[in-house]
Amino acid sequence: MIAYCGLNCTKCEAYIATQNNDDVLRAKVAQDWSKAYNVPVLPEHINCTGCLADGVKTFYCEQMCEIRKCAKGKEFKTCADCNDYACSKLNEVFKYAPDAKKELDSYRS
Image (cartoon, rainbow, N blue to C red; front, side, top):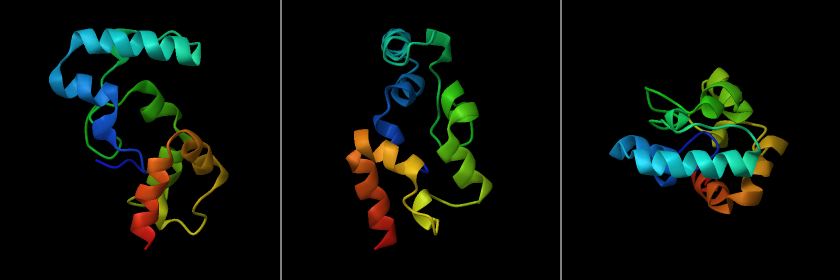
């Protein structure tokens, strides 16, 4: 359940809420994300089966994530497969999620 960028989907509250069908957690995540990103996010938007898994994704992950679009378009398993690893977009993720870098670095070893 590692995303293209190295994030662990099983630790994402949207994924957890989806797996547990937890409407209380969906409401909390929607409120937190609305505040953090200054955009309206509704509880019904909080559904995700994981970046690489078949099934529903949050709007951001499905439609807006440039990292996911890039890696998927190049048919990579993760960004660690890319000759441009780690690109500037990926380095932005690593700033707030250093474990994602460790995860991807382990694929390159």
